[in-house]
Image (cartoon, rainbow, N blue to C red; front, side, top):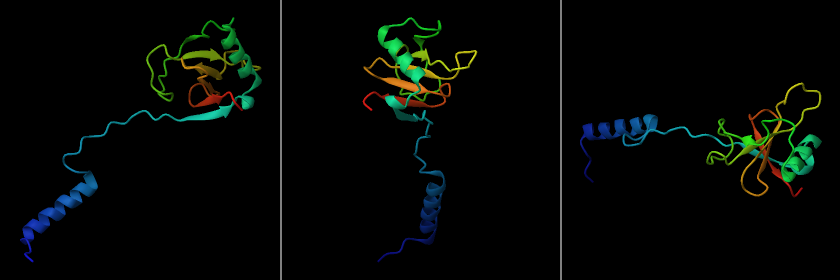
Length: 131
């Protein structure tokens, strides 16, 4: 068995250590992507006001706020990425609130693609209409 010269072994060891700590020299830098963190919620577990909002959406209004039915931009990047205009947002009334509050239903163009957020777009749950 032929043993390579020592400097070749040292060079290989150095390259191996460099690859372990920094990745291979030919590796492209990684670009962070938006993380989608969407849970799910049963329709029956939604607050009654969300049921009211979904009923209004189903019938086409009238809505309690002029912002209802406007395009949701998905700036937070939590929902799946879609073209502008795909998502619409609607207010879920918060009892005792002087403002629109933080609760919303965001709908997608797909049938029964409804998302609920109770924390003003920090998180979303896809509504399961079958439970």
